[in-house]
Image 1: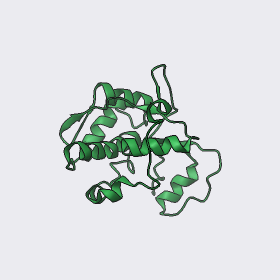
Image 2: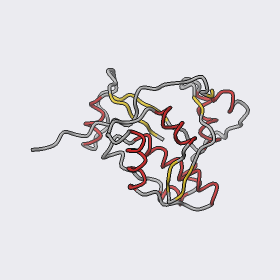
Image 3: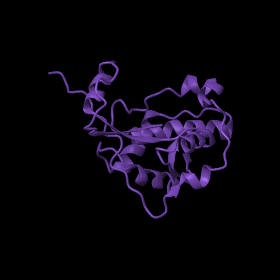
Image 4: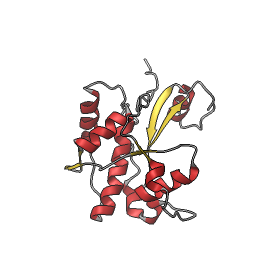
Length: 185
């Protein structure tokens, strides 16, 4: 019996709280070059940084995105690539979900990353802050990407996109209903 294609469950419905920092307040004065691609300027990251981190097998897209971002943060701080294992991805994901393959609420996961950190490359890593972006403000998004070595984006995708992706095809239908949550770094 053929199994059904795995549907991403990598990001649940968004939540905000009173402490959510607005990116506009943080990034307003940053000057951005016309073009910028961190990975193309740091080819050793590009060579090692194109991994799924289990997001093709589990609904762990939020943690997989965190791994991509941590890899780049640590490259800038240490000048070397850390080796993040699939076991570290899986351990953190199931820790935050309580054991089920259910996807994560991004805000809760970010709060955990800031307060508790996570083990990646054999060491604990924490972020100091995170901020919400106005998805309609293109200049703000560019500043955030440039200042912070990328951003994480929550998406709602049509189920047909998952089936198309599984078959290696471009998405046929991008119209509503967008019923599958996903997260991309």
